[in-house]
Image (tube, rainbow, N blue to C red; front, side, top):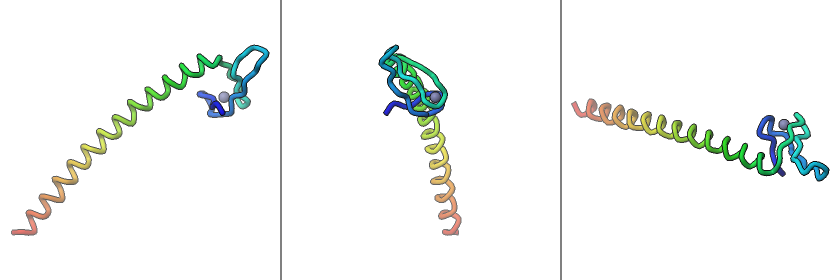
Length: 76
Ligand SMILES: [Zn+2]
């Protein structure tokens, strides 16, 4: 089942005009346009998750350093 890129509603295929029509918001797109839409959204999300992963790595580095320095302090 295709999902509406605008509202995530169900897209139903309308054979009359050969368009996918959203049953929630009424957005109508051809299959090609719908693919383009989702590719765009996926690319944007891909970049976002990349940034999130990078931020997590930075945080992990910091935590590693922090726990290491705590262990060092214990040795004194
Ligand atoms: Zn919709």
